[in-house]
Length: 304
Image 1: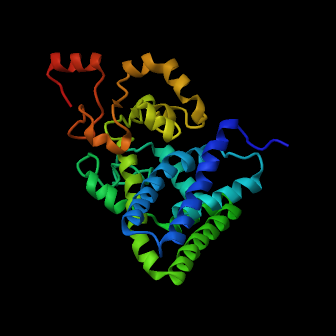
Image 2 (image 1 turned 60 degrees about the horizontal axis):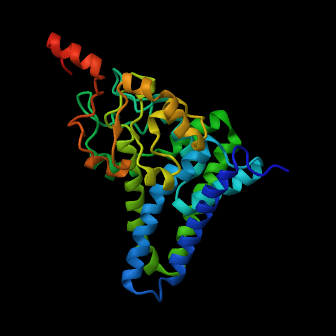
Image 3 (image 1 turned 180 degrees about the horizontal axis):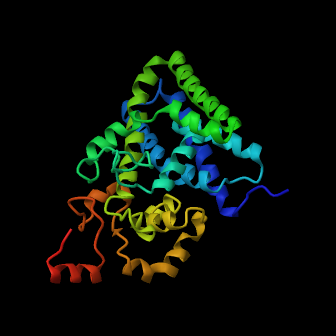
């Protein structure tokens, strides 16, 4: 019987997802006896792990479910929900909206198709400021709206998503009942972890071109980042071909690299979470003008 659907390499993110849940349980278990500096280190490790999981393990799983068995995919979805503290099923739908809109700009009514769009709460056609996007996005989800949209497609998926929410909330409450000091210490790191994920997501699109499919995303080819984050850096490539398996991204990039250069795909040097350190970071998230178009614009006196 076939275990993995697409690639034997998918066992790596599967084991990493299980390891993060095990890390959280270990964090809880050692809390009463570990020194403060170990606990702070574990807290920040867990926070970084949330962003790592959401943008790597969880993200690739929702596009290409790892297991051939629907039951095993349900179980792993629950593992992910417990490990990072939100419903994997609800995230899958929100992410589907993300690919429907591709970080689109506001329409005439001030709305965006993509609920995660960096333009959704921006002003004057520009992206939202980084700090408000990072610090407030966690509180902007509307579980009822997400549930209703999922239920229109699949009542079973909607019910499972609610079960995942109840499961992770019960898990957190149980930890709080058993050791309220732990949950008070833990929750700020949990929140910081989700903020780090939104920080990563902001620079996945800041400077991208919402009007060109090949340039919807912003890519980073930092080798260590892509090795650890399961090729999350190939984000322009991913938005151009969302169903392509993460192991194929580098080869696909090399295949279309010349076309990407012609179309002005934005590439940053650091990992996305450190996108603010990129030496060519634009002041505003306006689409970058490809070199040929830029020369024409300069000659005619028309600039963005």
